[in-house]
Image (cartoon, rainbow, N blue to C red; front, side, top):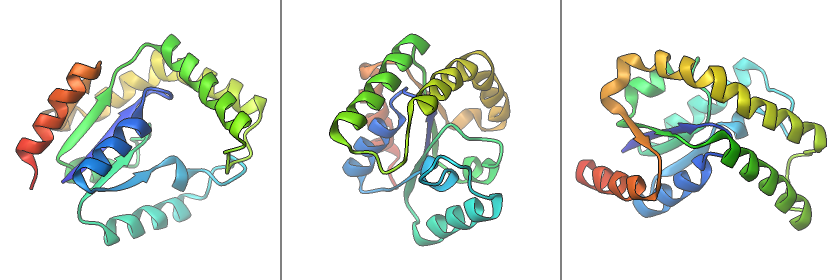
Length: 168
């Protein structure tokens, strides 16, 4: 089973990916972990591709989650499902701010994230909503048969049934 999960920042990609990964024993790759270093500096394309190739070569069943798509056509061609989480941008703003605060309170932040990063994340959230989401949907047009839209918890239950039914 190979699944790609996407959606705007704060949409619940990591939460859903972790749940499905645990339930179906799939290896999980959060693309942010291969795209950004600990100081939120973008790594080189070569390093990113090397990390992605390493993950794919070591895992036959996987979940990959992220907001990226321009360099992932091979992933989309290979995966069984492309799960697109649709959520309200205001709810995502709330989740982004809550996640930032919780990381600061718990000091559970392996990346050096500051207030400037929070502001950029909220701006990225709205850019995603107004522009990037449309670009993504256009990019994956050739993979529409794999595209599954998730809006609420009931859809997640239906999604688990779909995955179980198609589990290899």
